[in-house]
Image (cartoon, rainbow, N blue to C red; front, side, top):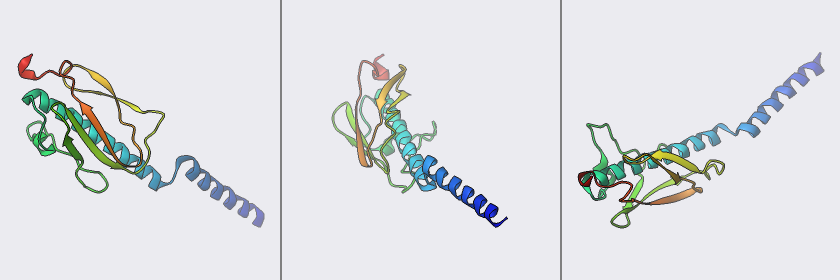
Length: 150
């Protein structure tokens, strides 16, 4: 009987260890979810920056300029630290969004399709390494013309 109990305990312990090996630790899953939220936040910010550009024919000076209480647009912050995402204007039609990621992105799904502006979607690469990563984007005036010039 004693060997049976030890055997059951061994099987349970092995199952728990195998679960952590296959699925990863709860901390790993938490970091993965934070990184996924960061990438989603940057995509949403990009979408709102392009909308701002289409409406005003210029890039916003800061991310707070895209906040809009009527449409319910709030500028997100890092889900783990609460820090603001970085935004910089690089040119007349070019901007950069940066965040600090904990893990390397999933290389099996490097492309994210997200609608931008009025004319459908585009493939965007949101692949990132661990650490601070910046994404530079250039607005195509032909795909996303200013709304007052249509």
